[in-house]
Image 1 (spheres, rainbow, N blue to C red):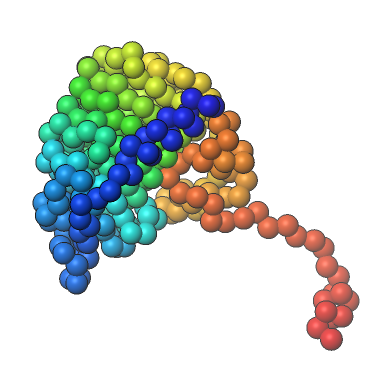
Image 2 (tube, helix red, strand yellow):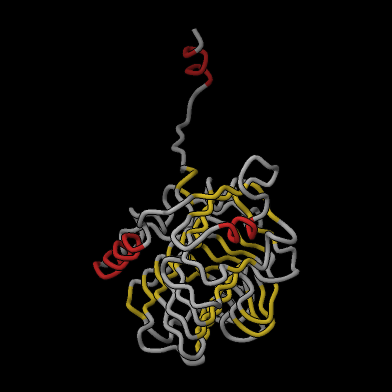
Length: 290
């Protein structure tokens, strides 16, 4: 438990330095850019790109590339209100130009991505920070439906992965040759094919801890870097399957009160409650209205 919390603190501290400039993406105009990629292109390392709520589709909003920049791409309102819909035409985001921990992806829903590898997020030769995102219905034709990592050391924490898949192992995470990864406090559930994890050369520095690995077709075996406190419980989302509502019920095992590591697990917080009820007679109802 202490190790997980310590890494969270160090990673967050590393990524909270001063930003040289803040750029605003507003699709209807009134900001600095109208597409997410245009906002990224305006920014320099050390800058922040803030994205307004909405659903982003088409050219300039999918197949996003940080182009080697150490920038923070963050939504104004969180993953529940900021959606990158790939419409089954390509990747969500790619990191393949040597980006480091100062390249941050924070607070988006990435859905309906399709690619050969790493449909939702493709990482090759980079070590970005991926946090507070939802990835759903992302499918890879080989491996890494949610995330593919090769020759990189990303930190992937407090994300929610649901309904992703791949033709081979690694329906959610594929850790390929030369890769290490810090994967913790994520919800990984409902993988449709390929299992939660696939390994084809992950290095010994991989760290996987305090993830809720629930109901994944193909299994949820942590084969490399199991640091403990991983578990398999229904995360108790507020919405029914397919609704896209990944906020948590008050009694979810992914809240800080009920998770094994006493930390929040997943991208979104509590937004619905279990309401206590009591039997009330008609006479009592009438007396309350007087």
